[in-house]
Length: 108
Image (cartoon, rainbow, N blue to C red; front, side, top):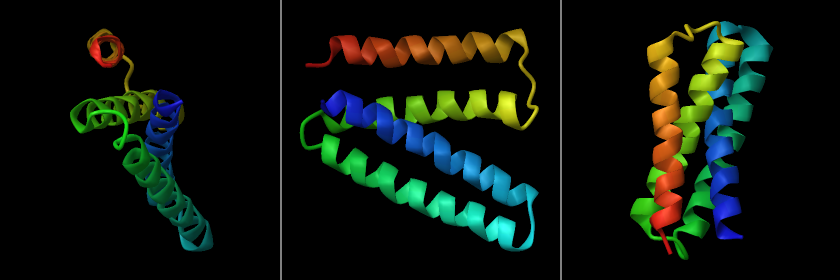
């Protein structure tokens, strides 16, 4: 259950990065709505992270949380913000995902 919460927290970290990117691209009220989404995603992500760190070691939880957020943000950048998807970026993205899974496998 706590690992699932940690995955959701990482997804909300990706969400606040996406909202920040969209807020940067827009103006006026639309930008404020994206900033509201950023704030909401940030709060939800942090609260979930706080909760799971009571049951999963902080070093593991934080590394997995940032890894999920980083991987999700890179994918969002490629899919939503037209960032490059060259071999090197994708290779290191896969390596990051392997590291996240590895941390999960060696954690109690």
